[in-house]
Amino acid sequence: MRVLILVDELFASRERSMLSRLEVGLADEGVRVIHAVPDGEAVRSSSAGVFRSMVTYSRRVMTLMRGVAARQVVRAIADMDDADEPEPIDLVHVFGGSVWGLGERLAAELSASVALEVWRPGLIHRAVRMSARVAEPRPVFFAPDPATEAELRQQPVPVRPTYWGVHAAESPRRVLQAGRAPTVMFIGSGRDAKRCQAAFQGTVSALRAGGEGLVFVDSLVARRAGLWGVAESMDVLDRVTLIEELESRRDLLLQGDILMQCEPMGEQKTVILEAMSTGMLVVSAADRSISSLISGRTATLVEEPTATAWSGAVKRLLEHPGEREAIAASAHQYIRTSRLASAHIRAVLDAYAWMTSSGSIPFVSRDV
Image (cartoon, rainbow, N blue to C red; front, side):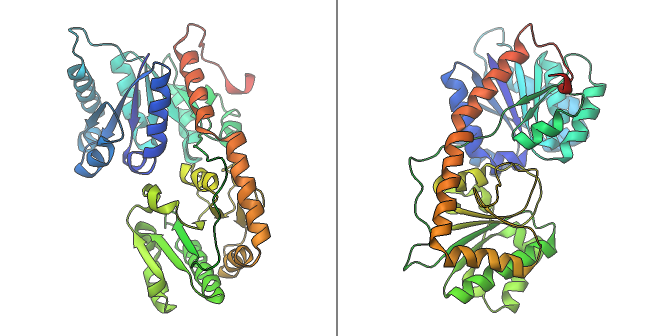
């Protein structure tokens, strides 16, 4: 089987680790993978050492003429083949809502099936519309989380569960160790400025009350939500460091003690799973769309979007070592039993096999 994995700029940057794990796992089972990533020096350079076979597509051409962009990708794939007759692509697997349309056109050009990852709630209604208008074979929608699967199964669309997973060590590392300043990794989108500011203010207040502490903030979140100005007004600029694309810097981010997710965006992120797998403490806005966020078991959830609520959540972890160690151990065990990368790869392989078999008759989800 040969698969084209199409990703948009966000996935090419933020989810490189997952895409690399998926490629390696598929290759071990004999699936040959080509990645199609957006053009641009930053994306190409960051992806070059991750993906074995890669082609690029023009974001500008895609916006203006989707069919032309699709044909350019098809020609690039043909140029990669040494044989006189290019080896066919069996399936196009799409990560990123901004390239769903391109994935649909590519599948048509290649006479291949298409799988679309529904990684945020806003894509569910779009999946329904696309499924209704696209001729056979209908697109199949992959659910990376049980909550997403449950919502999709209420709709008349073909759906396959492919829960995202990560690697996990035998045991979690210890965080918030005595004699070391606590470190908080602050992520989000920054679009809900009030929530982000409340989370930032609460976090800084809790750290200041406990003595020392450092906060590493995704620079995009800081710009959108005006967090640098908040830090300046609180006189804590010496405690705050802005990091460009912090979510993509797993080498740095996973060395922190606490991962702070300030907005209930409903977006699936492997960074949250990776934090749990290492023993980091996750403090997040409550979010029903993310099944892995389980209060008191895998994370500390903040229901109220106030600085007081966020401060209280962080203080509790700082002041109660027994409670934080129990949550870290429980979250680590949750990953080992429910969200491993190996299970994700098996689910994707099963979905691929179903889609490319003669028995993959389009079905209505609620009847499955």
